[in-house]
Length: 164
Image (cartoon, rainbow, N blue to C red):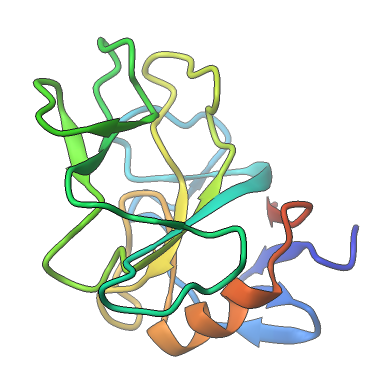
């Protein structure tokens, strides 16, 4: 293990000597992830990016990129842009990254099924803010706003999320 690794445990994510409570996908942890199963994939996932809402929060890290109006994430396995950031207007199934609620004010991107997506293997696994404590995600790992904002500036592009 590396010093900047994040390790999912039954009590939360262990990162840099701290434990951060979190929630995972409603489908639990799986070794055979597929689109729409709501599960968090087991494995070692590299952190590959960070996005933030500049109209709501300060840049959390020098390498974080702003989420602009019209930024979307494709979750349509039949589309060539599957599991990639795309722009509106976009005719295929997608998630809005610039949401009315604060869930995606700060998004940490993993390399799950990226950059060369296998169709149907599941789209993005983000680290983001939870809806409320204990409320499951669609497969992502979610934290309280306070904890997510503590974690983000400490993450490096060499950080890995380890899901045993």
